[in-house]
Image 1 (cartoon, protein in one colour):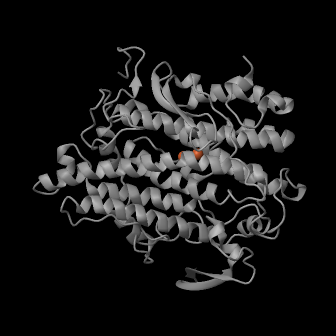
Image 2 (image 1 turned 30 degrees about the horizontal axis):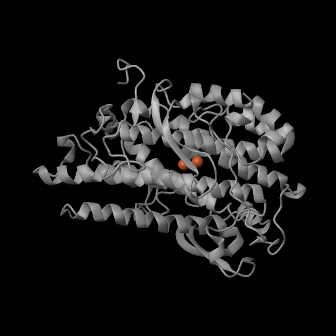
Image 3 (image 1 turned 180 degrees about the horizontal axis):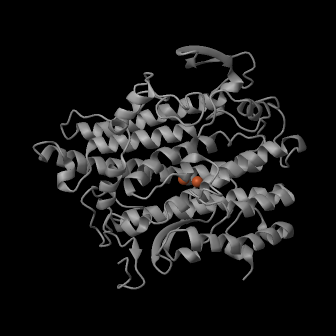
Length: 475
Ligand SMILES: [Fe+2]
Ligand SMILES: [Fe+2]
């Protein structure tokens, strides 16, 4: 069977011999990577997965029980909007580009490779989670997220192969060689080298890290380079499910935590097989602060260049009336000569911070919904997002110590308080102890509530995963 038959696509793959040749070479390396670094232990099992089969709003997804090794990773670009012009930056008003302009080649390649690298990275981070899934429903959702991150890699590799010639093909190869957390050849961004080996981390990751993905993708959906804009538009439709997995996952953890907190005379949910609310807060602090780093430096010449070149815009740039940002300024508060001071910087240089602002507002809405869940159990405990300066490793706040409220503090005091705010290895180990697989349809681990409904009209006790061998160590 021809490769193009294996790859659902709307880019007329079979008519482009050069692209076909490139992808025919890349695909075996991808499959080998998936076998070595993809989800561990479920190759022969039938997983109820959705597969993207078109970009048509009514029928883009097909659901069926499939083996992951037979999954068909497709290449889809959203349809071009007729008459669409470049929306922002120095080229605003001009026609969209269908080829890469020579002067922006390096910048565009960097943007695409950085995005692309996160996709296989998260699959690697989540590789072992299936063996401790709290239910078949959750196992299926994990594997769905994993295959879709694989498809996102395909989407970016398609751009590299089709538009960047030999360099693009080399980058595509290298994407399969880096490894999350490997000291010699790590993934590009720090959050994607963190361990994600328990399900509370996974739900925090899909809430906060996939949400960073949403904002990065969204800022590329208006790119003057049309194939990138159209690829990211379609990726966003899949990303929505990943965010759902994260937010609803934490919400279900909170339901058990809150119920058991109420039940225990000392308010300790962990005595009843659930997770303490304070532990959820510390995991939140860790993942959220790490994800804030992903937006890049607060004051950034690269960010200014991306905007000026009409490559990367603000989130939903179409909501704004002014798309040049030449005479505006942005105030950034940071430590200068020993005290917090406000500095005015040209708006274009603050584009990373502008995107971070949007992200923070979105995260605030999520936490508000989680707190409504806790409140519904009659508890006064509330989760809180730490200040954007807290626990930062990148940017102007890196290397300084701030409380979760954003107050400057000396490093010694920070260290004595560290485990009030961030999970200790002992706390992580206690979470790890809860990670036992539950593979009976309709049953859920003690630390997480059942979902209110299942996926795509199926009940929570639907057989989302059918094990090939009932004696399979996983079953
Ligand atoms: Fe993705
Ligand atoms: Fe994602």
